Length: 181
Image (cartoon, rainbow, N blue to C red; front, top):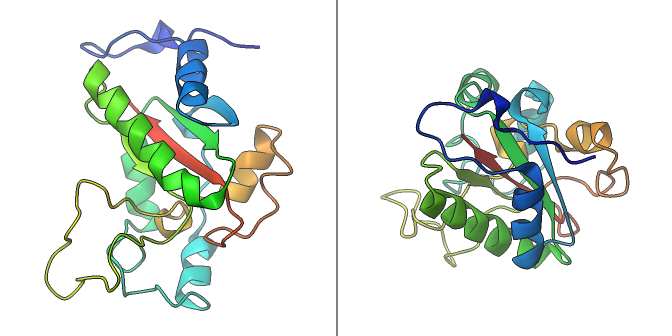
């Protein structure tokens, strides 16, 4: 069931229905899309633990911990958002392009706080310039797991059980998210 999510709309934020958001995501290449309320996004401290112990990108890219929000910081950040669109791409390589395009689209519509979260560690540079500054701040976006999002639990809650199976940040993860104010 598609519902109109504008009933709790904040002043100055444009009106857009969940159906319009899903339609836009599909037009941009999503094979699946669903609008959820931001308070239904599950967070967990364990997600960053998996980054720290098991991921070679930990502390080496701006889009991964130790440079991403902590669980408490992400919890506070989510309070600034009303909803999010969860998207599934055909291939893992398409997720970043898709969520970034959606973020840009929503910002152009007037959703000034729209922000994308990807599935994979950043690969925009051969070697991350973490020692100095990000070379692509307009394109680099943090991973869901790096921001403490328990994406598997969030996906299972919305009935996307198959999409929840791949390990977050793995080459098989095809899900991303855009936070919308």
